[in-house]
Amino acid sequence: MKVAVIGYPNVGKSSLVNRLSESREAVVHERPGVTRDRHELPAEWNGRRFSLIDTGGMDLADDDALASSIRDQARAALSDAEVALLVVDAKAGLRPGDHDLAEVLRRGDVPVVVAANKIDAGAEMPYAAEFHALGLGDPMPVSAAQGLGTGDLLDRLVDLLPEDEPEPPDRPVRLAVIGRPNVGKSSLVNRILGEERVIVSEVAGTTRDAIDLPLEVDGRRLVLIDTAGLRRQAKVQESVEYFTTLRSRRAAERADVAVVVCDATDGVTAQDQRVAELAMQSGCATVLVLNKWDAQEDLDLEHERAKVGSKLRLRPRVLTASARTGRGVTRLLTEAIVLADRSANRIPTPELNRFVADVVAQRQPPQRHGHRLRLLYMAQIGERPPRFAISVNARNRLTRDYAYFVENRLRERYRLQGVPVIIDFVEKRDRRDAA
Image (tube, rainbow, N blue to C red; front, side, top):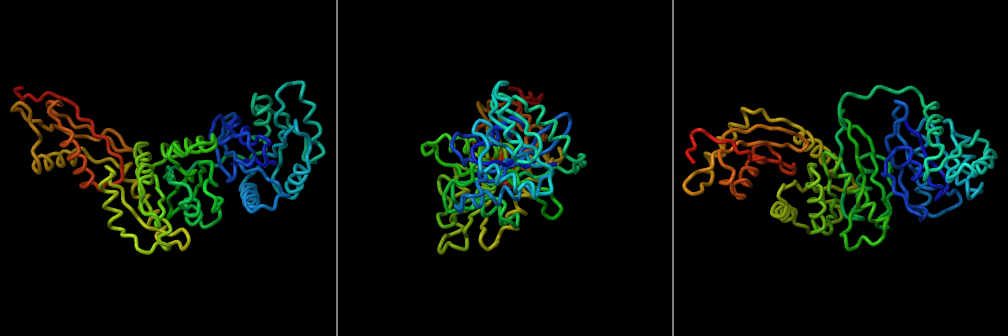
């Protein structure tokens, strides 16, 4: 169940969405036009779960190309929703832009609730009465900043929503699409979805929110998370860029797989590698994709793969794709789903102990003061990311080099390249150990 939140620019839609969803996911800034794509956030009220679709400010009189794209996104949100929430600025009063939006909503086929926002005190309640002129029923006075009237607003929205549908039993795979600004992330997302779902512009930084986009691939439920471009910290000068960077990091933290998009005309840059490291540190599996592959002329793919393998400990795969032509996109999705499954898999304990025996046979553990480290037992204790515990006789005999050797052999045996792996070496005295 979805509620599309629309309104004229800078009426406080994102602030109200944050208040109603009890989150800070929607980017809020005093500058108008910060929200550009449509952005779904989960909400719950009195046991009813639904999504709020935050949209960019709609000015029907603005003929700018970006404004037109924002309007298209808002209209798409309306077509996907069961209820529309029109947010107006009660302190600014009724404006021509509000009338234009009300006319669009009256021609639609979904119920509409008018929220007269920025009423921060009881004495300001009469400001809402002016918006009866929109012809959309009784306007509801609310304050996104203070929370005034939001409970009554949620009651009205929930009453208008149809009955809940049962949730599908399978867990969707969450793919975060991250990378430097203007490498083609949103174009790639649109190609995957088969529609202009997010705004694409030659202007770097068009995407500012992390946007959840559900889809299905060969019967598997996926959620694509399109994110704002990541810049080096020295370049994050505006508060808007700071918060979008923060949300991109958080998107990686809640994803199963991070798709790090690189520009094939540049190759895998040092900043691309830093983005990949960020994703790996967040605990999600990672794959790099060289987008715009159709535009590059002489890039040595094997050299790029060798560079990534030598620099990044998780050794993620490097694939190629073209958002413009669609080449390689299906393969990229397949690889991402496989990585998610491997990150969620559990390896049987007997198999892991056979692995330990093979590792020891391949390379003897180190010794200290004449006494050798023994690997006694191995078991998997977690997933997403996979976590293992290896019992050893004396942890102080373990060297970093041997720990990396075990980790690398584990990746090779179970095809965990690009998947974060945690190995805990737990000391347990062996009766055969005289030390």
